[in-house]
Image (cartoon, rainbow, N blue to C red; front, side, top):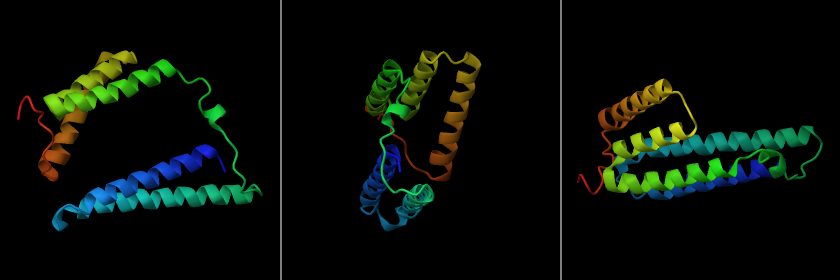
Length: 151
């Protein structure tokens, strides 16, 4: 088994547990959809764990080897740090100016940073805004953050 697989499996189970603990405090009628997603996440993660164990058993060893050197070979730390900082700025912007404005600014900034064609940026923005609006606002009727400036 690979160290990276074990780390991913552990993190996904931790995320599922965190969201489960957050979901059980919701009103009962609001728990169904999130619990379904959490169950699907945990189930798929369990299938991945089983797949990893079966692969290791077929290879004849259940020992763990560190593969971080292979995974992070060629990693561009500046790009990784830039996107990580961008995610933090997105959260701050979402709190102040709301989800839609923050998402547009974050996506445009990130896609321009990675030198994506402007047509693809426009298509991504239109698709994201339409999809998020349709799913969260129309279908699920979940209010998205409006930000403290527009509240």
